[in-house]
Length: 33
Length: 253
Image (spheres, each protein chain N blue to C red):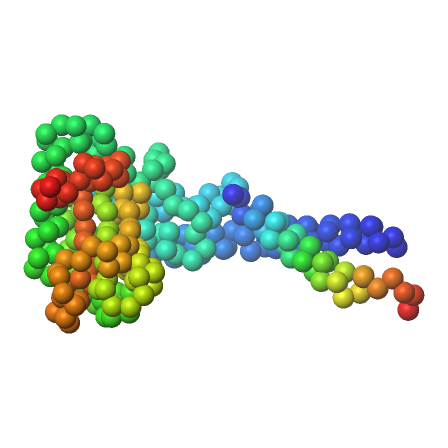
């Protein structure tokens, strides 16, 4: 696999994990702050 | 900003980060990997091999080139593969490790010459095993320094058996739980197999199986019998890994 693709996938997976964690912490609460 | 566009912006920023990071560090990373691999090859005396990595596109797959015999080629592959960051290694123009290709499995067994080859290989290995000892401490699969020296000799003998398969059999004494013993014997066989692969024997040609205490060599349960039963055996077979054509099995009936 080309290195560029590896780098892209790695960062996108990191982004997705960050998104999931963010959603888990803040996104689940639907109340207005 | 809508949540969807926030996520898209984040994803786009991530992609840009990846592209910039790749452009800035990618080539140096591959050059570093290449230098490390070449240094390692030279240090092992395999300086006939030149290693290069893909540049367009950049890739972590190593391609080796140069003049070397099959043994050295396998060694070089193992050395390069062991470097952290290298994803795969191959020789230019070859997809499979050379030792796995030759030996013409299938024909080797049916011909008497093939049987002779298996018998000779088995007897070479048996001689080494008779003169030395692959032993383990009770309850341990740790491969000792002495065992590593024996493995060096076995690997050298096996390299002359081009294309023949070898079954590594692990056995334990009959103390303790049968399931634990079987797992332990499997682990011992696995370690020995890994040792042979490290020494350049093609992994596809080696099988490892643990029999626990079901096939004791010595009867009884004294310390001497236990020590004899905690052992590794090597059985040479045809290149296709079949054991029914195994020369030793035939010798033993």
